Length: 535
Image (cartoon, rainbow, N blue to C red):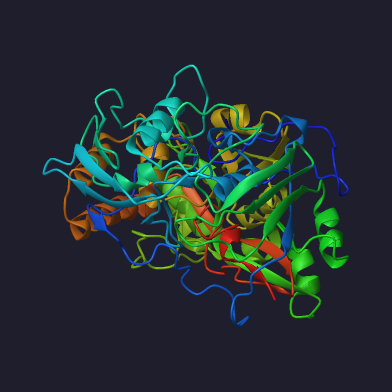
């Protein structure tokens, strides 16, 4: 699986609407842990924190039709296999997790009513709220343990498997019908992030027949499913977080962005996922449809390999930081649909280092650094591909920017099929993208010496030690200070040149209300149809 993006395998053009080839990306693969040390209640978990702009009193009834990019005839409703955005949208309609990510990528309680750690942070007690599955049976500790052990099965390749790695599931146990003691392999202060991990859904114990008649505890219950075509779910009146406003939700597959837009304009659907910036500009504020921009949804970057020339010299890396004109990159590669980055992941997320000065181009300083490094007439290959939106445009723009500092970038176009598995690992300078995930997870998955998706080859034992110190620290304020130290180090000499953060764009019919506008893709309130209604 590619680093933090769902890979894009060819699939049949099966469609109730004209087909879509480009598949949505889903960030954050691998091991992660997030959250607060102990949490009880944490407010109303159903509060969307300001959904929609007006819309009046929610109205009950109706069927909402939502168009997503799909995966063809191989699609499944098994929530532990969810990879595409369409998979996850369907999974979160049918199932629940113990926790999920808020707009700032902090863990918010869902099926877990509370969690609390022991003094050494290697045992956590989780208490479930009272909730039932669609068949009326209660959600119990045994269901949770079954779900997690299924995900962790080494014979399978379930998405959340790596995220659950810190858990010793053989030693973890139910201490009551709704109480679980999780035993961890090491101190993990950000344990709630494990509960919120992508794909860590709770299913009934012994459940396997997900495509025939899946039973979950989510806001909608199963009606029908035709892989690669559509899925229909009906309101679950007994949902613990309040019954949805809609009677039904139908997920439709459309194989091109233009097909989703045309279906929305023609009244065939009321919700169209993953629109292009040009589409948004053409329709925003015109009154026919509503455009929703989910800010800070996707990090855009260049990945410099710190273990090989020329980027094994931190002066060269700093020079590249100073060559980049981030405003021009956002305007050109993202068509303005985003904000500039500052060479750090997670803008707007919990623990983000906001006190560091915003970098701006400084070509004189960049030339001086290159001269000090003996790289005055540097020539480097920049690998890119049409595998992700904006990659080829960003490469061309950065090539022209680098030329002004005397650096020659040879842009090399790579295959979509091998980019994430081969080119990204073997290149020296590459285009890179990541969706939303907690900053702690980004650090643990990509920047520790033993991280499995360490694209920049950043390997420093003192950096690893800071991470372990943070995970062993009780006070959140003290952990935040340690994460800030790690980010300052990356800002000064890391391998990610983070030039921007892209909007994720959704279109809706004007009668659709309650769509959350402050939730990056992959978070709790993204594609959350239980809080949406038709006016």
